[in-house]
Image (cartoon, rainbow, N blue to C red):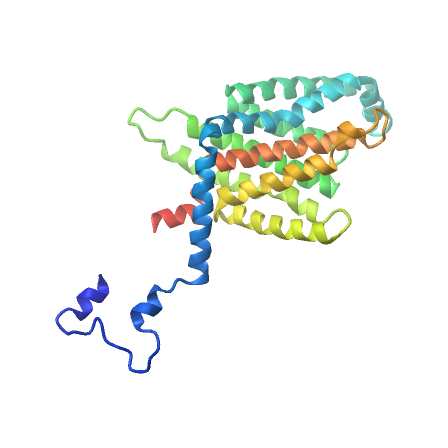
Length: 304
């Protein structure tokens, strides 16, 4: 439109290039590599949206269920290994005998009740903060807070819980005027940003642990790019789906606890890691469903 206005009446809009090179119109019509990449990713996102239509309504429920899987499994493990848990807390953590019973009992009750509330979407805020409290108290009680891998994993689980909290605010009833309260909108965008950042910390821990090989390098590179895209909110849904696929395959191949003997020393560790990764996958599914939120490149592109 600017070209038409600028050349109307002067016969300048269709000048030939005397040197035989591309004209100005041809040069401006040639898309840049970034625009070509954006066009291709848009096509992929449209295809993914179309393919996910039949299951889209089930994604939020699946995400919430997967997020609390690790807490349900942990509650069952404590109940089935009650004596071993008491012995560990008393002999290795030097916690007085009566407090060990209270510590385990309160953790089991909190994990089962809060996980149930998250699944049925009742009192979600209290349930999320209750589960975050469980993560913190267990890190202190079991003395694992200074274990970097454990620390990053649990921060990622907390990121998934923040996505549950943000999802509950999306579904919350609005004010009578039909608009969300300003304070609620502000809380939501900050919580979504914090959830996105925390979710990818598990992958950071994955990159810095284990033996290196060609396959691990390739997966790490793809995953690292996807993590950066999730954090900045650029093609966040597409990159979250990529992380879901990578983590799911990794979980099935590496943390296959069901193939280990009942008394294998690494069985409990593999099971624990398996359900923790499931929780983070659940958080990523909620990100796919909700989008990255206001603090993201994707959202800014809609504005401008």
